Length: 253
Ligand SMILES: C[S@@+](CC[C@H](N)C(=O)[O-])C[C@H]1O[C@@H](n2cnc3c(N)ncnc32)[C@H](O)[C@@H]1O
Image (tube, rainbow, N blue to C red):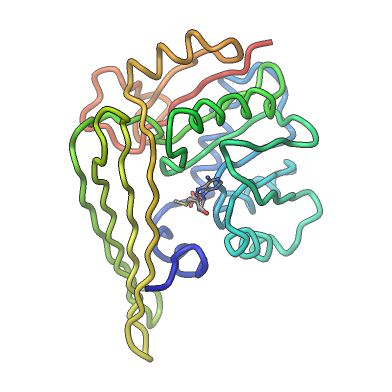
């Protein structure tokens, strides 16, 4: 079975149900409400094909995408027509450095792929260096709000002559190490037949109170808040079900 991330065009189709320009506007609203500094430079962690990159660039921001997949980065660069104020870094989110700090950063779809506690802490240490004082870091769904529950989800969309079926599974591996295996399988039915692509990764997950404790004791971050389903007027407190939550922390001065 082919690796999904070496076929970015199928990854993009599988997740094309999102309104990336609208998501960019929510991130911009989050900046307006909570940032502790003016924002010109933006970093997307695990950027993949950089879904919001065109919207950031059109609105005059400088955009940097970090990803470990050369194929995904190549696709992202092509999507924005090699724009001059876009930069691409091939690297590991647990251990990277930027030439210059950014004013704002985000990671979407729970893409905080750190396989163990050392890597997870390494990521926050790298983010502390990557963000300028007062800069926000928005994490979509990077906390496990349903600990110990294995998940299966699937969706199917048609784009022209192509039908794309996506199967997402999350399976707990080790409950002491707090590791899960996340797997995405995409089958594209086209005129020439069906092809299936897959990717899987181990993630060390954090639970809500553990995350709050971690951030509140972290020397470089403060907790700003968490909201449900990309709605900055719907705090997570009391929200049910929790879906696509946004968690926001700020770099301390
Ligand atoms: C689910 S995709 C998310 C892409 C994009 N941010 C989006 O919203 O569609 C996850 C991305 O994370 C990247 N990735 C996985 N592990 C990584 C790591 N350790 N460091 C950097 N990127 C990683 C993959 O190559 C892939 O492009």
